[in-house]
Image 1 (tube, chains in turn blue, green):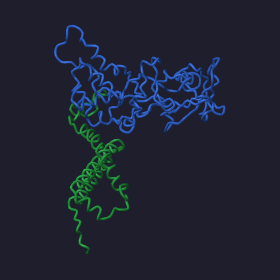
Image 2 (cartoon, rainbow over the protein chains, first blue to last red):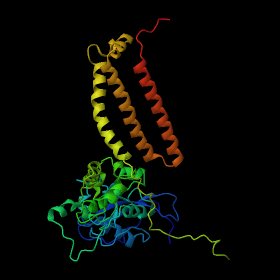
Image 3 (tube, each protein chain N blue to C red):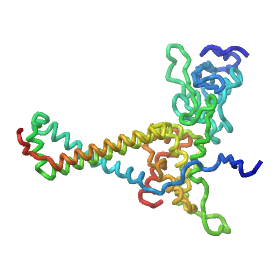
Image 4 (cartoon, chains in turn purple, orange):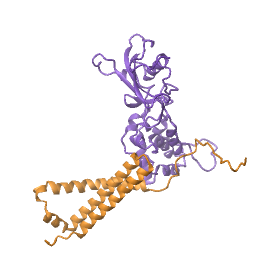
Length: 262
Length: 141
C-alpha cells in the first residue's frame, strides 16, 4: 500500500470515462477513526455523465481509487433511505441527485465543477460518510411508532374512511433517512431533542383514526425535548427527499396539544 | 463463587433511554406565553420607542419632570410595568431555551440558569419597586 498521497492528488485515471462525460471534482469529507483525529477534505477528479447520480461518483471512487471509502446504500433508488448525506451543503439522498443538476451554469476559469459531499450532521461520524444512526432510531422508538389499539381484535380489517386516511397521508411517506433530523439546528445543538423524523412518525399514528395511543404519544411529545423545541426553521421540510411537509406535521402536533384535540 | 456477588448486567440496547414523560404542560404554556407576550411587546415597545424618541422633540425633551409626569398616571405605570414583566419573562424564557440548547454539561446548564433566574428576579424586583414607589418630590438635599 502506498503512503498517503497529498490532497487532491488521487490517481483517478482508472475510472472509465464514457463518451460525453465531464470531469467533476468531488470533495469528500473523509474520516478514518483508526488514523485521523478529525475529519479532513480530500478531492477526487471523477469523470461523470450528466445523467449520473452522486452515488455513481462515490462508487467510482470506491471501486477504482480508494476501496476504504465508507458510505451506506441499499436500494440505490430513493426508497430505503440509507444514503442521506450533505451534498453541496444540503441534505440529500446521493441516489436521487443527478450530476446535471449540480453543474453550474458555466465552468469557472476552466476548473472542473466541484461537488462537496459530507456526512449528515448531528449524528456521530463513524467513518467517512457513515454515521451512527442509533440516537436517531432511539428517538424514533421513543414515540411508539406502531398501532396501539385496545379491546378485542376485530374479525375483519380495521376500516377507515378516505378522509380519515388523508389526514396522515403525508407522514406515511417517511423512509427514515434522517435527512430532516440531521438538518435541524436544534438537533445539532441538543441531541436529546426528538427531532423532526420522530415527530413525523408520531404524527402518522396520532392522526390515525384506528389508533388509540394518541394520548400517550402526545404526552411524550409535550415534554421538554418534544415539539416545543421546534423553532420552525423549515430546514426539515427543505431536506426531505420524499417531499413531506415536515414542519407542517410538527405544527399539527403542537395544535393537537394546544387544543387537546386531534 | 456466589451468584449474589455478581451483579446482573443486562445489555439492553433497545430499551428506552429517555426518562418517562413528566406529564407537565410547562413547555406548552411557555410556548403560548412566548407568542402572546411577543405580540404584546411589539405594541408596548414600539409605542414606548415612538413616544420616547420621535413624538414632539423626541429624546431631547426627556428629563426628570417628564418621567415624573408620566408616572403620575396609572396608565403609564401599567404600560411600563407590563413592558418590564413581559420583556423580562419573554427574554428570560428565550435565554432558558438557548441555554438548554447550547450548554454541554449539566453543571454549566444549571449555573447559567441560576445566573439567569437571579438576574431576572433582581431586575423585576428593582423595576417594580421603582415604578410603584417613585416619588416625584425628591428633596433637593
